[in-house]
Image (cartoon, rainbow, N blue to C red):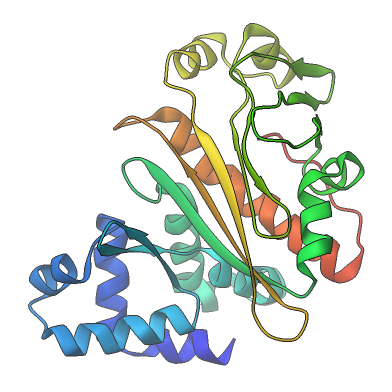
Length: 265
């Protein structure tokens, strides 16, 4: 937590976060131009922000893209905001709300968290129905081989579709699959507006990727990338609000063994 407060204390770093909140997924060159700061200064500030996990980065060809990361703000909110006077932490609450409400970019959601566990246990938590049902409220039937189908179960709803498949499965390192199918039964089960779900169904099918990277003694860096959305996607807006809660539940379950409430997305 100390690194987060230190990073947020500098106004230049807050300006960088504001810039990414306005338009996520920027390159170093774009951030420098938008803030009229020297490249070296911006690089140093970005390193501090990345060290505090307030931003996460991904390569796109030769360029490095920078994304806001809601995880540390969520952790602060869960630890203190519900226990102390909310008026005293209004700024943090606003930042948490902004990070969760706004899509991570025009076509992707990116989220990084550090979990005290092993790659083997985290992989099991991502693929074993007994685990996913506990922190997500969803379970999957699949042999987790590339090209294999995934049957998605959540509450009384199930989804099976030829395009709902595993894309990549490298145990303990990387898992990727296409997102579930939106149908009238989904809208009915989760009490959503039929027209909204029908609109989601007309969008191209998105995909989610989990990247696992050992980071210290029994700590795993988990980066979740949900992408493949068209510009202005309403599905992206919906999943951006759902993923932080799911991943917070996953982290808590692996670190404490607690049974957590069901999520609907």
